[in-house]
Image (cartoon, rainbow, N blue to C red; front, side, top):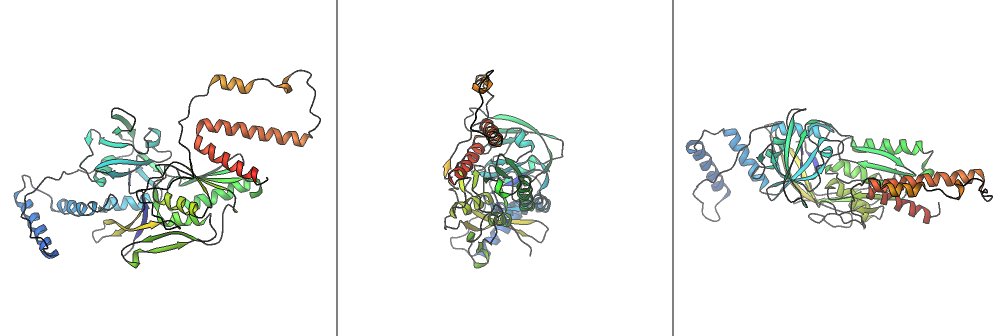
Length: 442
């Protein structure tokens, strides 16, 4: 039987609308304490037949059984669930990096649908959906009382159609509505660019494209810089990355490590317990590395951050991660559906579980939303200096090449200062790498 190992944020990617159902209380005769499993199954069959014959409306047998299966699974933990055939097909398609929907990774907390993170370049991100938001209604229909799969089904629909979400957010006194347009979500799992002398690697999810995108991007940026000697360091941005495939998290961790354990999983049986070890080879040639995380960094993201932190390979910057330390196995079923079942906990190389705790950053840097440029500050930067005065004597201590280097460094510092107003966490990470490089004697 094929199995898809997942380390997803517990969530399901909200992306085709089906009808939902509400569970109502049913009177049934209790069996005596200590009754056997077979007697309990007889009880289930008895209740099933009574519902079919006595419920106020005619019921669909398949829907009833599906609801019973899903109820059994979601009673275990927020991440175990039943995937009907269509949902299973959607899930397999999602891990390849393209799907239709809103671009929100969600989980369930005490019956409420909670946003783990919006995904880069999606309708959810553009509409301002934030990690930690609660979705209390979809097109006016309350989500409380629905299973996670049912809530996600409400959010799926034809590409180009509109959907209105009711959002409950900390620091907002009243719920508010956000209208989005469903779209085909094409995720570039990893984007790589250069800021000054630092290569920034943004990984948005862990799917089959993540490592190939990352490896190709790093090689491209190093070549464009004229070689690794012209690079000060690397920033791995895992903010709002909800997780994905465990195998990709292991491969990407291995890309920055030469040896040692990456992660271990421990389940009830040896079959569900594994240990993964790094192989020789570091794509960054041992250059300084900073990892950015926040409350939207979950599961596979936490595996990577935890491994690099425990091996002292990277400095972790940002805010505490989501705290999902369990592994789900997708088990195909005979009806072409599947079961998502929590089969193990994962542990970082030092043996710590981050379940419900998250990864604590080495340096806490809260995100500050961008603000408009202060005209006075801009005028201050543009103020004239001695060099601007007519007839000013020249500096005779610098060669033309030295003067050019100083001008290039000044331009880089001005670009870094501008970045602080756009993304203070990323700017801090780049400053940290610059400081490490300066202290090591670049």
